[in-house]
Amino acid sequence: IAELERYNFLTENHDEIYALVLHMMNFNEKEFQSVFQRCVIRKGFLNTILEVIYPFLNQIGILWGTNKIIASQEHFISNLIRQKLITAIDSLPMPSENAPSIALVLLDNEDHEIGLLLSSFIAKNMGWHVFYFGQRVPSSELNIIAEKINPDIILTLFVAGKRSADIARIQRIIEMNKHIPFLFSGGSFSKELLNASDQCIYIKNPDEYIDFLEKWPQNV
Image (cartoon, rainbow, N blue to C red):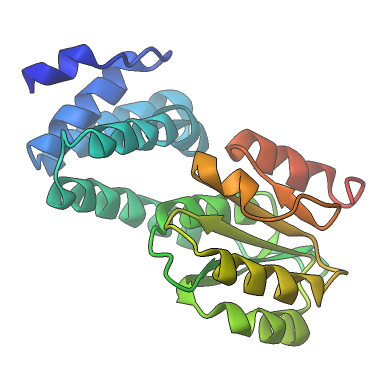
């Protein structure tokens, strides 16, 4: 734990993020819940996720990349956050009949669901009709999703590595449904995966995602 002092948690919520890292490393659910609830009381649920949990997850990525945490620690905390998001999503009201719709999907070998759940909460909280497909959906089924649901937007996240052949296949499927904007995000490498166009739009962070949904459909 002392090695964490080398890492620079320079954010407005330094103390909370540092505490969450320690509780993750110690598998301490009780203290995680305590920090989380204090943040929700002070900031509200959405701001807690955007201002504390989102940068905390970025720190986990740094610690993972430098071999300072192990898989079980990351899985432990990710599942606690996952439970919070699912509970919050379930508590939101159903959208109106004429609400815009968004399909959220992780393609092929993608397993990291936290970002997709956050996208789901944000969209539903803004009154969107969310079709949530979760992990490891075959990219070949994007055509079925587009045909059967005809969502206003499709969003996916790229975290796992991708072969060029896999990306080319996804790109071809997307281009078969040119009437649907395709938002994508993920690690820093993901920005270069798809050819940026009026249809394929890279989303850097949750703030850009919120801004895109707020301006819909003027931004297409």
